Image (tube, rainbow, N blue to C red; front, side):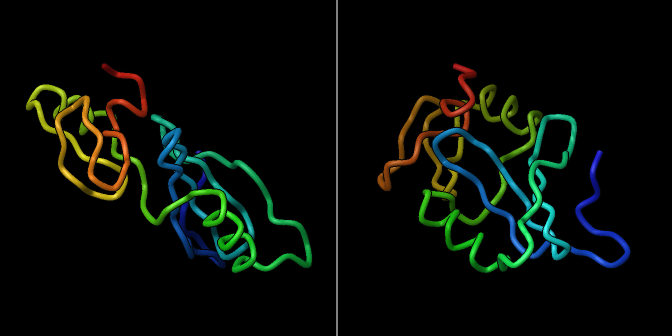
Length: 112
């Protein structure tokens, strides 16, 4: 398990891909972590000479948005309640798509 924050580093940005649900955290030490159902794991290391800001802008251009995917327990709760959220925070039916075009997290993860 990788730490989000620790001695000498901290998370500077959390992003999520609304198409596949991949959540990443970019740390100040240039390590990029990805969220799994078991916690955060090391995913990538930013190359020397490339700024964190450049990486963030590139991820925005690839469709990533600010935020992080919900926990599995939250997804199950939404499924039982018959209401869900989308990556941009809209409330929709579990199999719904919001007015901004984002699918519910339950659809993204194929839980329906």
